[in-house]
Image (tube, rainbow, N blue to C red; front, side, top):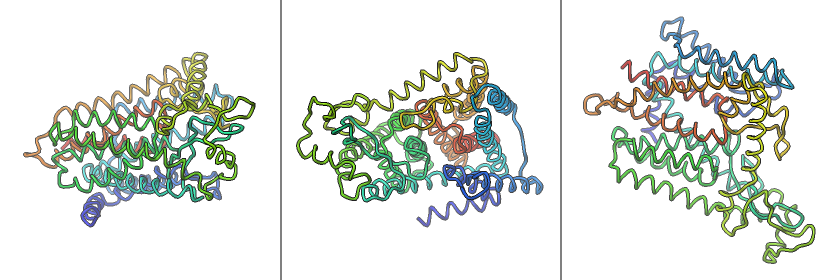
Amino acid sequence: MIRILTSFRRDWVLTGAAGTALLVLFLGVLTNRYRLETLFLRPHPEHFALVIAIGALVWLVIQKRTRIRFQLADLLLGAYLGIALVSALLFPPEPRASVQYWARMFLSILIYFVARWLMSGAPIPAFRLILKALFGFGVLEALFGIVSWFLYPSGINLGVDEYPLGIRGPGGILCNFSLTMYGTLWEPNVFGSTLMLVVLSGATLFVSTEFASWRKYLGIALVIMLVAMGLNASRGALLSLLLGMGLVVLIAGGMSLWGRLKWAGAALVLVLVVNISAQQLSNVLMQLPSAPGFATRAPCAEWIAAGMPRGVQPGDPELDPDTGPDSDLGAINRMLEAQTLQSRWVSYRRAWNDFLARPILGNGPNSFGQKYTTTAHTPGWISNLVLMSLHDTGVIGTLILLAWFAVLAWRVLAVLRRRPPAETDGQRAALYTMTLALGIGLLCLFAAYQVTTMLWFGLMWYLMAVLQVGASALVDG
């Protein structure tokens, strides 16, 4: 632990005021789900963090310790924001609400620029600092989620949802379910996909030669986060984890191919064992007298004690077709559960039809939730990054946004194709491995965002800035 703190402190000192501002901004984007309700306009912590970071950036520019530089690709982001604003003003049922969401998009892109410029003064130490902060957050968030999962049945909810599975009891009461945590993040899928990014980044470092001396610490951190992912059981995150493990095995350097295969196999077995055990255990825990909502499920306890008999009269227990197949194994129910898949399909179809109605400029940012609601009677949400962009900003906006992603990907891949030899330049080799690690994590996060997305929250743009600075440092250094 002392070695970890010493290493973190060294990079913090090397980055100075920029490093402090970057850490403040990092903390802000991680806690963006909270609002300060008593203050005017109900600001998020992210807003205060951004003000502090911009103030530090202005001071550093005045001191000539960093420079504000624009790139040609930045014009694409400006053009996308322009298209989104026009669409927000012209087409949604509630233009004001769409403009407010556009402001969130603007702030996320502003976070990208501020983080990029703050890192430019000392890119390599700043990259190391943020990557270490990301791993620290991943472990703490995983521990918080694990504790939350076990505390929930005692009546303490620190961030856990009940996830319906297969069987409905008498009168349609929810009797078969699992627990899924979201910790301090927005919701369970965001929790799972964010941990997936950190796990894959850590896995790339774990198998590398440059970070062999850190394997014990990385291994402990990865086990903790993999356990949390198993308890969370987000299908999109688990599938993206499988994709990422394949990438680590195929392209990460360091360990032999057989060694990488053994490690990846052990990690996936751990997730599988935790997932299956958790789905079975959660139902048992939720029958405790202290469990939330236990009184409303008293008929469930009687029905389960009677062997879960089925009947044919109205109100009798039955298989609910909206919650998936009946099975004795909760993990199978969780993976094949159909309610959320059906609700996504309905939202995708509606979003596509709306896009066809306005294919050029779209319907306006976040206008989908102004027209449709979910089965939980919350504003509708398009859980697909590309389809959301098509619906909100049309073909023109989507092509511009995808072009910017393509430019970023091309720059990073062009750098990663040239692996520096560790024996001649250890620092550049380590930077290469860290850039590759974050690149694999973000690529799989992008894949996860095709079934659940938080693109327009600051964390994604913050990490994309870090990735770009890491790739640029490899070229400049």
